[in-house]
Length: 477
Image (tube, rainbow, N blue to C red; front, side, top):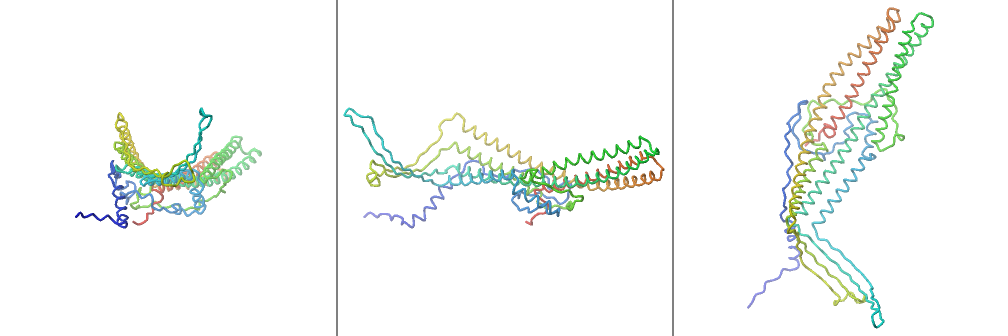
């Protein structure tokens, strides 16, 4: 007596379905698995103690890095960059586009189903009997297909698009940080210009008083024409310098407006004689987040990951594609009985497609992908090296500027004292005005030099914060 094997129950078949799907989806994936390229970097900074080697964490929240300056006006301006800056808006849209591409790639791993329906009437020319032939045709069909990812081509494509989307996200973060950094630098330069213009205006007022006194003496015959000309030269030179700074300030204000997504006519920043911000202290020790939050480095590294996956996609071109497809529906000449058994049509079966001969085209694509990967690795390593260079540069600049400013402050104080002494001597009739003009010009020059150094210091502090990815305050691990 034959014993028939018991068929799996419906419940058992349903339980096995996910397992079968998992086995089909877990086929081998050709091409190399990704590993972050090694970069030969120092474990510390030459210009600062406490730096250690770190791994990128560009997604880590940086908060409002500009809060260290304690300037409400600056904070208000910078917050508008991520909202209204048009470059930021462009990269944000590109990031959304990249995420949508990831969703599209993920859907390729699963079956797709389509449907179609048609209803047509056709006819032919009259025959020998003088009659025309008219026929109707109606159809309603549905089909499904599933490309089995046996070689991992679809998974590598998804991996590539994921990495590209992450690169796009890092690029968005980088353009945002760059715009914010540029605005902060412009803001501090503008505030220093305000002080420089105010200094020139004070000098113009003082030089005008001197000119009035000397002109009175000249009219009385007690002062020479040369002295009067010297005083006029000094006055007009200061006026010209103030006007030169005025248009530079206006252009800087325009640049700030554009960074906030506004036209220059929509924005103005009133002049301030003093900077209310607080210059952040240079950290003596910096946490291990060295370059972890730099979005440009993360962008370069994610491009490497995408290029690595692209190599797998190219290698998969050597292997055939296997697709399962099925279709079914109804077709007939009468619409009223279309959905009847005699009108049913169906098809079911796999299809296999591949390349037999391409004269090296696939090999060339693989070689192109590998070369692109090598280029992205080099770009990533260069981005890391550039990051180290920038931080080193700004650290040594800030450390040196602090001592330079102290020296310049002493020089400025000495020049102001010299100008004060010569003014007293001139008013006492002990010296000519030429000596006064010389010391006054020297004092003004030293004060302007001090302001220029301070401007450089403010700008360098912003550049250092940007160079470490948005602040040196790290979130505890």
